[in-house]
Length: 133
Image (cartoon, rainbow, N blue to C red; front, side, top):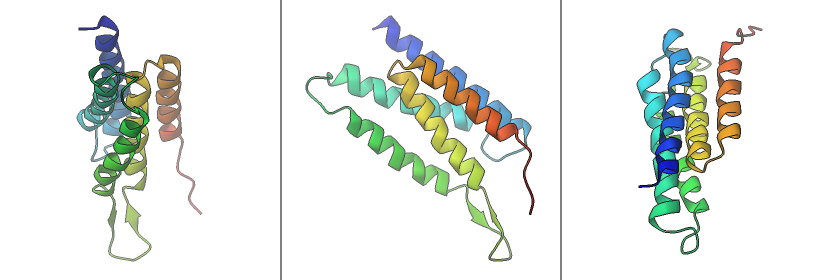
């Protein structure tokens, strides 16, 4: 097994945990375990497409497209409407799950700087106070 592939998985787990920790501390429904699993899964799909099929024999960008669509279904599951039509909850959690999948894809592809920067930006954005109109 490639030591680099193992490192990529661990980076994905660590970054997903960092994002998930912020969500858990904020009391959101999708916490650390969810974000770790999303990031890890996206990373593993990326690694499987690179190492399992070979970069020369398969268009590995198809995996990224599949992850983006598949994670959209997970994200949709956390969006719900309140009693009034204008009350929608879970959009930020859904977007965070989606963005965490992108972090996992980047880690799986070995784009460490981008993955770490994106995770830090995600946590930074999530830490901003809400602006109420």
